[in-house]
Amino acid sequence: MSAVLNCNISFIGGGNMAQALIGGLIARGLPPTRITVSDPVEQVRELLKEKDVHVTEDNLAAIADADIVVFAVKPQVLAQVLRPLHGQFEDKLVISIVAGAEISTIANLLGTERVVRVMPNTPALVQTGAHGLYATEYVDAKDRELASQVLAATGLTIWVNSEAQIDAVTAVSGSGPAYFFYMMESMIRAGKNLGLDEKVATALTLQTALGAAQMAITSSNTPAELRKNVTSPNGTTQAAIEVFDHAQISQNIQAALAAAKMRSQELAQELSDSI
Image (cartoon, rainbow, N blue to C red; front, side, top):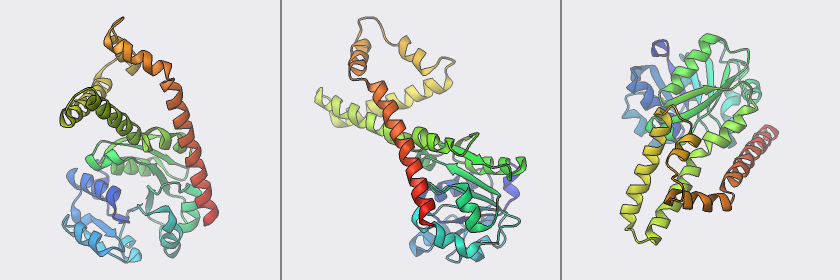
């Protein structure tokens, strides 16, 4: 983490994900005075002032002294935000967390090839995110390490081998939290139908999800092995798993992720075509 602590980092866009990264970086020792955030919304700027970072609504001013610039804007405003900044990135590393924005799109709009594309996910808001990163050969090992350190402030960082794999990352981890929330929602509803108070069903479900994830992370066994270990023959767990299997839950999950990947590809193409 030491290298990034000596960098000036600017954020274009100060929304939730940017705020999560800013909070994580400060918690890891980056002085707030090294952070500048540009956002058009006064309420957002006032909120960010509480973190003692520099705030502005002038994007050019925000990036002037930056070593690293993180773009965290909505895809629909990407072109209008980036075009006026073209040619200002000769000595700057660009990190984009803009959904669907391919590296070629960012590079053309800014006039630089030093671009890292990131697919984050929302648990970054509580420093437990999972971030997929990709960069072309124009981004050297030093820049890759800097990008890793920025994103590691809010969770796990994984580099993928091709930009096409970012669509798979989107399907697995980018959209992934919603799948687990869906499962939790269903379990809470089932608990209520079985006679539990909603607060009890919620507490049991959330703690079970947390415990299962922690077991999977710390165990030398795979999730499949852990499941088999707690599934006694003719027991209650087996009865539930048989219902899942009969409903082809595993196949449906695979189909759902394939649909998410395809939609990610479509959105990237739509964004590229609109610019």
